[in-house]
Length: 178
Image (cartoon, rainbow, N blue to C red; front, side, top):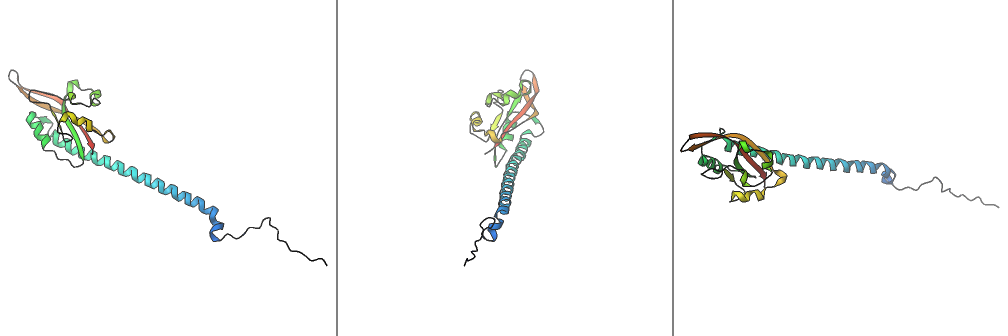
């Protein structure tokens, strides 16, 4: 008389979600780990290429300086300008000039105008490929990629009264990428 009713207990019994549904909790950490890995890989790659650009700019700056410096002896203003006009650079801009070594202080390199460069009766010892007027070239400097180098150099000057004088100078070169 009494019918036996067969009710399934809902406690502890789960429904079938599918093959991926059961593995979903273990897939989430794997996907998260892959996202973190590729983000780190992308960041490292970007850092490498930014360092590579800076490194190639430094190499080009060294080539430019080698052309300007020569044998660390400049005979005249015309010799300096000949060296400047012979420079050909592809990716970099530069400002180069001579500074009196006796008045050199690091704070002058932050000054960013052409008043720091040496001037004699022939002209101001400054050259650039950034602007037609060297005084305006300092406004074009890109501070992010700026490389400042300075090297000792000797400048020969002739005077009517005292004859030949060789002055110790610094060749100051500002180089930055376009």
